[in-house]
Length: 289
Image 1 (cartoon, rainbow, N blue to C red):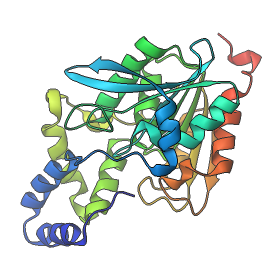
Image 2 (spheres, rainbow, N blue to C red):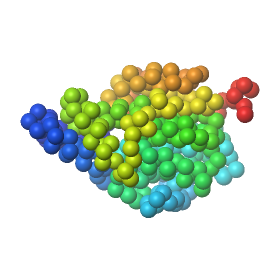
Image 3 (cartoon, rainbow, N blue to C red):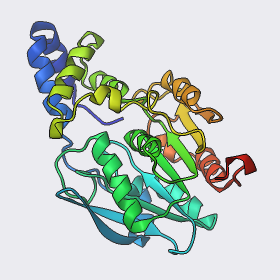
């Protein structure tokens, strides 16, 4: 879970009690402030440095892409989460390469080595499509947290892939907002006011963001073999959302873990093995187009 200084969370709690409108406005500004990009973890450095790098444009921003493996090998696209970066998938990249697959990822807008100052789920969806155009096609997509939400919505919009793994993914914008409010210490009573304010001020004059960014209302197509992975101790992506996501996608599977939280689930050998098994499993004859 991203770290929030105690002084910040205390300030938001006090302000929420004495001046709710001001608390909502300041929280909305904070919501878009990503701060310095996350560094590459020492444990991930060797994998990060082995990648073949490229760039892709999304609007006015230049995103850095990473490929591990041959271009003629079946490729899996990896979409990272909020305040993360491509290198965070290092254990999975290693396992995919050992299975004979190529792995492709990217640093989202305002993340890692890419440009930009703020990123939404819609920006992440646009990045996924742009990376497909330069590095695809992809046999499968794996997304973590916000990356899972964006990848799922992209699949709902027709993004071409046969398999999908969603790790620690929120159900939609409301769940993402709820995670943020818990993180900064604001009460649930201000949830709707906060969401409405963000929706009114969303970049690009996008409307109906609470409905549009919702993986239950806009689920992954049943033709895409889908695995949801959820840890019972995840305080960012609450476990209560996973059954809703699974129910929205007929035939999907749910893998639950315990004690790994929101990000350490990406390092767990059993989870990595389950993800590789899912993306390499043969498609049932009834699922072939």
